[in-house]
Image (cartoon, rainbow, N blue to C red; front, side, top):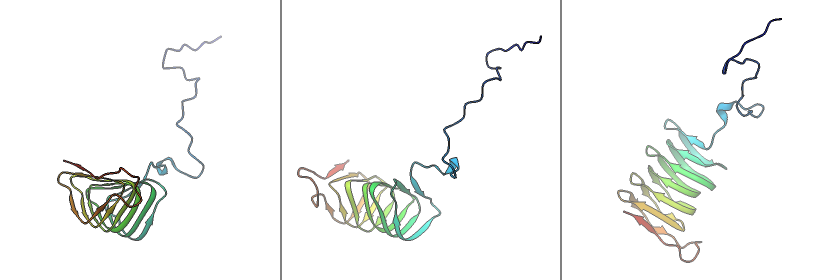
Length: 148
């Protein structure tokens, strides 16, 4: 009778572990954490998402990510009115911005338009030409925060 000798790491009787199953009809590479508009994309019209979104390209029109987070990348050029839960701006935005929770204008961010949000953070070096309204629809006691 023949016997098979095995050493640790050479046992071929166990099936290899497989990654989490992918839903039928959806390749693994399609599963994403957020929607991404790349640098080479130019979008004109109404952009609506029910997921978190990151924009690095150019958008003209409106952006509605009402219950989610929107990140404007450093190379983005946005000529649109924006509505989202939380907005972080590293690039350039021309238009009105409305957030239900917070707008975070980073040091490379530029806004030409009005911001309406209960909380606004603005880093040193950020550029804003417009008004900030932290009171419209906000809870009492909310204030503007400028980070230097």
